[in-house]
Image (tube, rainbow, N blue to C red; front, side, top):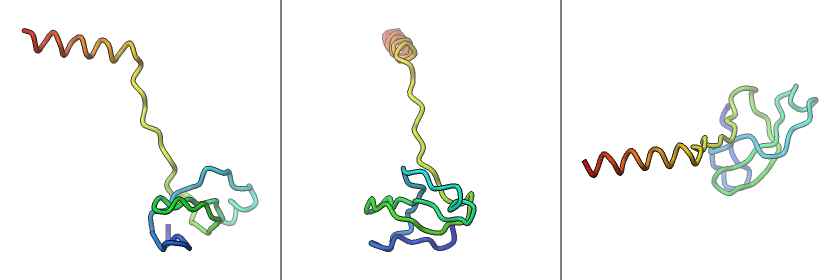
Length: 78
């Protein structure tokens, strides 16, 4: 991202917003952006591929959590 800043708080912590951008706008580099600092959703220019996306951390299945806890408990008791 080339010096993209939030229009409200001037923070540089910007990422793609939750709303999808129109294809025509994306072709010209205009995206719906979200400020991580003040949570403002705005439209702005960003070079494609340089704006971060929101990521979810992978959740561990409950069965794996139980197995891991059992292994840890058995290793502590030994």
